[in-house]
Image (cartoon, rainbow, N blue to C red; front, side, top):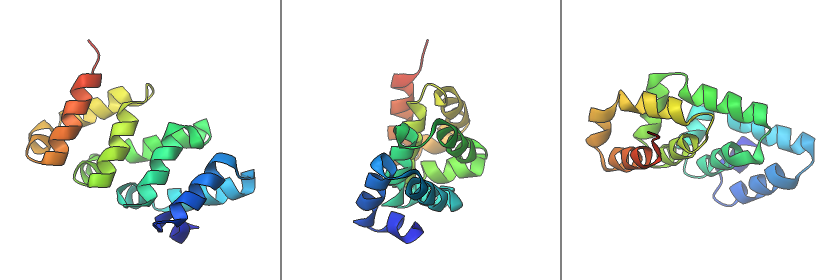
Length: 133
């Protein structure tokens, strides 16, 4: 299932399973994604599925556990910030009411580094526009 998630076209099959497959098949896909979650969040094709899971294709407890794992360590967040596909995952997390504040606080401490890269500046712009009062 991990190979399917990392395949250019397999990701669409995995997405269909996540959205409408039987629970056993969904569990297999989610287990494969979570097995190497930080790696998959930075992968060109698998990150697409991580985004879908965080937007509601996964069970709420799975979504929270995935978010917690991705936001648990500064190094993981930095690796997502530095990666084109990881930045999209962070952006989606920052748009989630449950995780937005944590993403903002973790990325604020990296503001200097974020401003040094094009991808970082885009993420910071998105965080500032979604920042509350």
